[in-house]
Image (cartoon, rainbow, N blue to C red; front, side):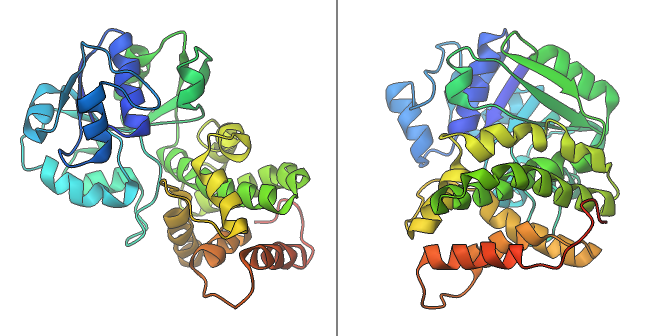
Length: 328
């Protein structure tokens, strides 16, 4: 299969590496002035992977788009709509798109596949590839399971068969709403996990796993998806990599937040908390954990230390009225 991976950061460079090593003809694209692209161009590798010589590295978007039967996008979620305006300047009517990114558009509340549809891409040509796994583990040969979902049954089955290997076992997703929302929401829970680590409350992560998944399940159901998706690979299945791993950007962001330190890399859970909070208000769904993350990330400085703010927020969660465990 001829594939172009658009975005050559951490995840994009891994995907190019993985698919090339499993028999596909791969182009890896990045903006010419982008740091990630410059590192790959100058050294042929980054801190995660060494690009196979068979991969064509390019900063020419038209070349990358023209090459591909399947276009995989791996960029910051909030930049997707603007990026699609550039892509659709070319003829993409017969190309399939795979979103290897997790998030919700803050300005609209749209899932990322909806952004593509609004950009003129047919729903039958859109898939999402999400689920657990860290590049550092994959490149050591440690396998994991992931999911590919799409409104098009034939497309998701084709992609899962084409992309499968001994390193990644794929499952077919059956609920694109739940798959996308769950994948985005797990990053919000990752921030809470980091806050627990920073405060020394690691024992609460079990409660976080159950309450976080339940919270997301309520929102998925309200938005028309299958609430069981919250307990699948896209969300609960990704908790080990997000809530516990030293490699998790979102967990690290939360831990550094407690210390009042800035995290230099991308933590998608920050804008996702804003998008989810708005969706919760729109659909009338109680999202206490999401709201807590939002308030810590976007709230005004009250003059206390970040640790005090975090501990106060956790205390506020514990002081909520008693409810049935599976309340709707």
